[in-house]
Amino acid sequence: MLQTARRPTAVSPVSTPPRAAATTPPPSVRVKGFTRSFGATSVLKDMNLDIQPAEFVALLGASGSGKTTLLRTLAGLDPAPVDQVSTPAARAVVFQDPRLMPWKRVWRNVALGLKGRDIRERAEGALGEVGLSHRLDAWPATLSGGEAQRAALARALIREPKLLLLDEPFAALDALTRIRMHELVLKLWRAHDPAVLLVTHDVDEAITLADRVLVLDHGRIAAEEVVTLPRPRDVDEAFQAIRRRLLSHLGVAGHGPSAAAELIAFRPRQDAH
Ligand SMILES: Nc1ncnc2c1ncn2[C@@H]1O[C@H](COP(=O)(O)OP(=O)(O)O)[C@@H](O)[C@H]1O
Ligand SMILES: [Mg+2]
Image (cartoon, rainbow, N blue to C red):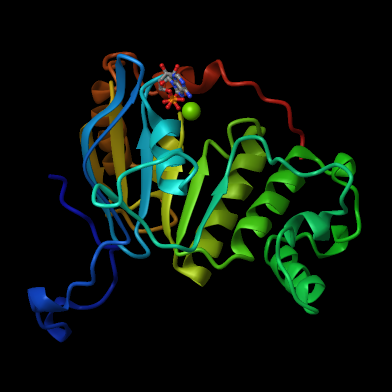
């Protein structure tokens, strides 16, 4: 069973007495012995995974290794036995495709499904947090790819999720926009404190953002790296050592740092902002 990691803090060890085991909060996500099959093929095999409240976990793995299947299960989009998969009720998902409804203005997309008189104000607040205050009444078709993904993040946030599920949300964005989105996601994570599961093909993105990086291989978690480097993270020696180990788990050892880029090279890039 995988051990969980806590977010590193800068608190002095002398001022913090060791916590009693009894005070440890229950995990936000618990997956225990879960198998997911399509026909005769098991995509997730006897999986065990805990994610702590407010922990940021990244999930790497080759195409077809079962990442989206796990994410859909945690999102409640696919069925799972309650004794094998437990998650907070407040969950939200952001996919690679922002999935905005073209016939609804941006704020209405963000407020989709919400009720009450104050939904416009709430949408305004969420869009303000992602830097889109000026696009409230815009039509989705007029947004850049980066803006559309910000709107998708606002739509997730407005639901105040305890678990935020991100399935390659930056894969279609250009490099500069991705860096801005990384900063935004970290800011939102700190402000709202959800547990996060980020699926990505990008090893550097995983190390830059997460407390813990998992490698999924043929339906099993084959490796994990706890990342305790202080944020913001530079690509220093410690970072590179983690990258080398993860690339090795992904079966691309010995190809140098560019292998990280190769892993994502086949992903379409279509955004300019
Ligand atoms: N609804 C489905 N029916 C049949 N096979 C599926 C379904 N969803 C996923 N699969 C299969 O499960 C495997 C894992 O898919 P997926 O979780 O999407 O992988 P990843 O996100 O890691 O690329 C793939 O072989 C895929 O074809
Ligand atoms: Mg996928």
